[in-house]
Length: 231
Image (tube, rainbow, N blue to C red; front, side):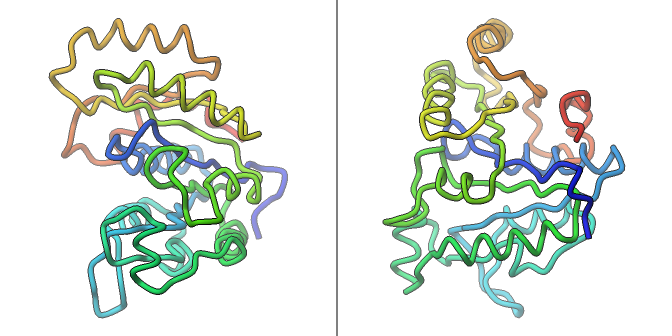
């Protein structure tokens, strides 16, 4: 059993879809592990899966599994693996699946029992719903997790980051940190935009990930500030 005096984990959200939540989540898992913590990933709902001999598998969920130690059962790490690469609500409907909060919470409890920290990666941006009746904020409140926001560093990130931070707070959740992820190598004035975010976001920056599509997660983890990741 994990020591309840230590951290439970984090919920990773983003300023949009395609801004590197998985990159940041896997790097964070390695950063936690480098501190001697047992850290496992979770992708509660994943749309866009491929059929394997073991069942439907999602690329992002598999990346989280590879970055986890100990490695949990895939069904706990990714309780809802939806075949079509669509918004979860639509993908679940097409698959004839009803996404249930208790199913997600039960899987989280099993992961929590085997680890010091669970890094839970959300879907899309913060306000992207999980189902017709379930928002990501509902899941975060149920799991009692603090939120880490991944900011995709590209044109428009100032607006997206500030709106997302406000939405997290308005939903009664706690934003404890943010990670800058450089997704556009051609973005102009990257350093200036980063400094504007540092000054305007109340939560501390946990690190700045460079544009490096092929960089392994364990190496990217060195870009995160371990002083902000302790229990």
